[in-house]
Length: 293
Image (cartoon, rainbow, N blue to C red; front, side, top):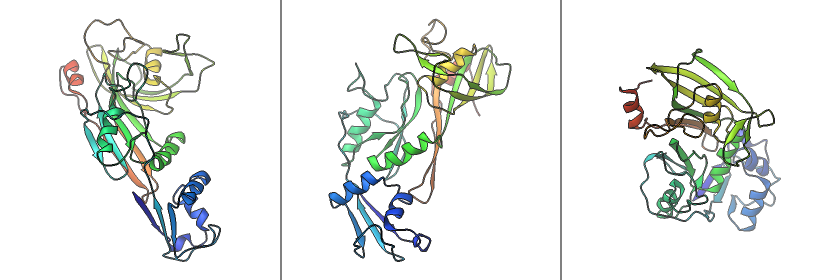
């Protein structure tokens, strides 16, 4: 894949190095690696990246896909959106996002790797969902694109929205849950603990039926199991959450769905991605009617 950048009039007060850092978001390490492998070219040729460019000068970069440690496995994927930079897939409940102990070949990452390998590309997972959670998982088609969006996640510039059905009726229609989360002693579960990491979740009640509430959730931080732990901590565990909620009585999946994701891809003229994933059928079946919001 080739990246081409044409120097604009507004760039003329910057050196080539500054353009690479501020407009193409290259780190010093990446610049050195590209230069060493002959993957970056300047037209007209330059003697130093510290010199100033002329208008309409061209920077060409060969983005060679880095190797992945994910084993490609043929499998079904539900593609929500795809372009030259990213692949958005709809992960079903029960399917792991990424290989881990006991799940090396049966994850959405394995299936996406197989799909992208057929296009001579490799996958770079951006966000992960719990095995039981359904919804949007995003893959970058190059480690460079992955690094750009990962910075947006780190700066909390990515807006993620989840839909959940929880036990009980909430007294407040909306609110902010801010409770620190820490890994529990079993090494798997998480718990609210004063020595934990800061965690913040916004919730909004968008519907209710019987003794259940339908919530729109926006995690401000991204701690493991954050939504599940926070909702359980206020006495409203997610339906189907048999780790942080009530005892299993039916074959109900976890009713937590990664409904939408929105972020700004600064590399391409601040392109905004705003992708949604429809609720799984069992949400509507559990409610006994079609849920709309």
